[in-house]
Amino acid sequence: PNMIWVFGYFRASWTLRADLIAGYVCRLLQHMDKQDVQMVAPALRAEDRDMELLPWVEPENFNPGYLMRSIHLMPKQGSVDPWRHTQDYWKDKDELPVADLDDGALVYK
Image (cartoon, rainbow, N blue to C red; front, side, top):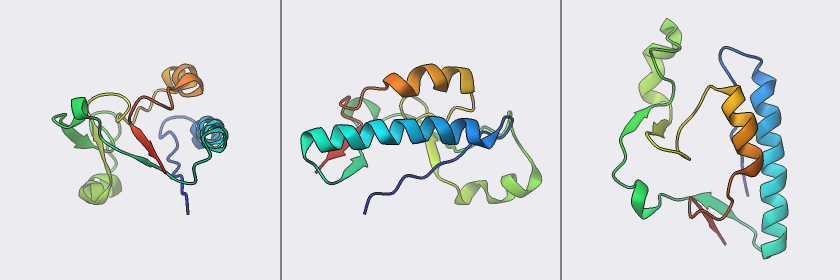
């Protein structure tokens, strides 16, 4: 089954990001219906394979002890879009609604 993992903002309302992700997911599901596909998964594009892997949360921006002690257990983020985990609502609100669903970062089946 398809699953979307939602991770909100640390320094703003969690639901601001959850709402943006919900809109993105609805758009993605509609896109999948049009293509008659049942599954989608992220995949590194050739140009992204050498990017630097970074901690999921940038320690210089958010660093409570409980998070820093378990940061090695968290997913990683990439150093380039679309693999960045931004904590910037103003950027996300402009980019997520128009994100290219066919840029090669998603594989449909």
